[in-house]
Image 1 (tube, rainbow over the protein chains, first blue to last red):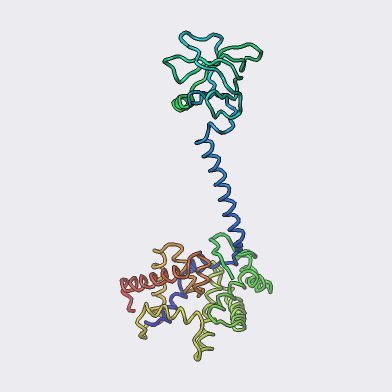
Image 2: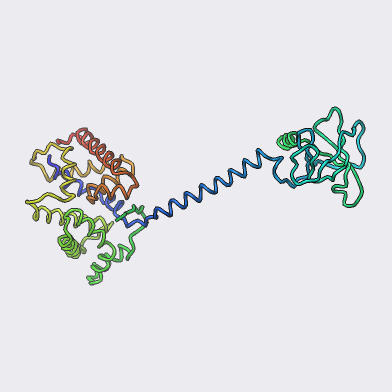
Amino acid sequence: MTAELLMNAIGDISDRYISEFSSVKPKKQIALWIKLSSLAACLALTMTIGFFAVMSLGNIETSPNYNPQIRLNNAVYVYTSTAHELPEGWELISEVKKFTQYVTENGDSNCCKQGEKIYQHPDKKHEIYVYTKLFSGSDKYWYVKFKSKKIEMMESTIS
Amino acid sequence: MKYEYIDEGMEVTGLDDEKIIDLFFSRSDKAISELSLKYGEMCFRVSENILHNKEDSEECVNETYFSVWNKIPPEHPNPLVSFVLKILRNIAINRYRHNTAKKRNSRYDACLDELSGCVSGLETTETIYEAKELSLHIDAFLEKHSKTNRMIFVRRYWYMDSISTLSEICGMSEGAIKTRLSRMRKELKAFLVEKGVEI
């Protein structure tokens, strides 16, 4: 058999295959600079999102945070609930040292005012009460409960 | 120039095939112009692939239109595109054989060279019968391949596209296209032997 015969045979293949692949058209090429700038934009976006994700996960204490919180004994306590009276067994342990947006040092709070008293139960180190005007709606003082962040996160995961 | 593969259903712009055929049946002179509008560029490209010559290719395309005019009616081809392209391919190959006893430089030769690896090169007596039987075997061979492989094979050995064009159509490197084609030729040879074809 000759290659020419094979070529003739290929020339007579089913119409189906000929029409199936008959249409080709000039391709609109995307310029290299468009491809590169798209890639750069994607990279920049990914890095920005990544940066903020890392900051929010790993550096919570140093970021400005508008959730009411207090830093004490190197733990961050976040707002949980309020009470008009201090439960039994809770003892005065400290007071708010600085009202600041950044709770970076022990005694810092972004919600309670300087000098407001902090109470803790000897057996419940993950909770504190602060005698404060926070959320009272007036100048009246009451007790606001805070829980340490890890406990708070664990409880929200379980629920 | 870059090309891209248009999947089935994404038709070339122009009148419906059926309407073009109606124009041929009514012997309207619009038939040729509509046919040319829709498939002229495609025809020219195939012809140019074989002949490598602009003037010859244009003549072949015109000859094809004339042949289609003579065949429709009575014929009512479906699909029209393969009917037209088959006529064109035969005309172009015949023109090529007529023109070039002297020089071998077109893609037709390149394709012949590649395919010569699949066959013995010896003449046989039952040539016409063999070609028809062979076509059926090639149909069966193509059937068992993926759409991409089928396209590469058909575009290379039917449309005689260059390797670089195929690489652009498929979005693969030229090396990858050559490898696929080489593998397919080997498989075709084995397939034909298995079917009892004397190669």
